[in-house]
Length: 226
Image (cartoon, rainbow, N blue to C red; front, side, top):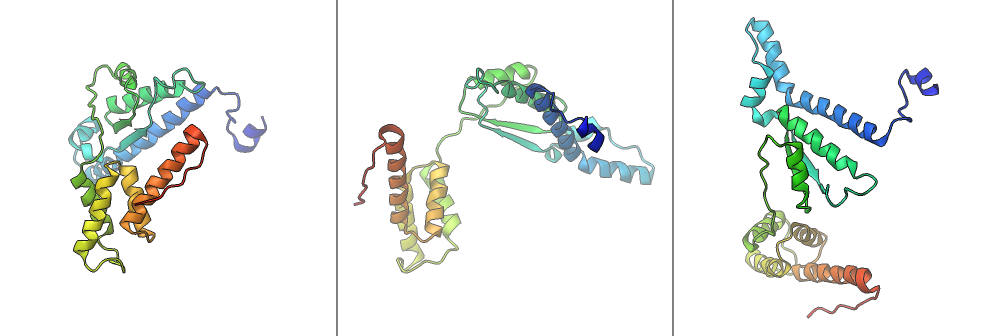
């Protein structure tokens, strides 16, 4: 009553979690539709000024897929979390995303390591083809290109006489590191903070050893690089 008296709106304190999540997603849908039709609204205004008939909304969205927002939903784990207290939210998100696709107002991308969650998406959107892409580690050539593009504008420093020697040192460490993007980004950040490629690689290895020792053994290990 106090909330209604002060703000003119209900506080929502008596709502269930499910209804609150639905309200949040409903508001999000409205905002996403406004973004998708931002340019369309300008076209309608221009058509009104010129006295011509504007294009229908459905036709506009069909002919201009680049105007639709791209929604990325990371860590979608509907099957893994289905028995949790908040497991319902994954089904709500799947239904919400399917509604965006059916209304043709957004592109939706789900990122998950839970293969079973694909069936949840198929159940929410049975009439549409769901395209699946399996993400893998980057190839050595891609990793080398990413690292060099990220660091080529940084000063060579006292450890290298030329760009060629610097590139060789970088690529030697990258080949040993592998193709996981997170590790490559950490490697680049360490070099930008002043490490040599060898020091950055050793630092990442030592950090991993510490994390593993804390998780599995709760013991400290000393690491010595060769």
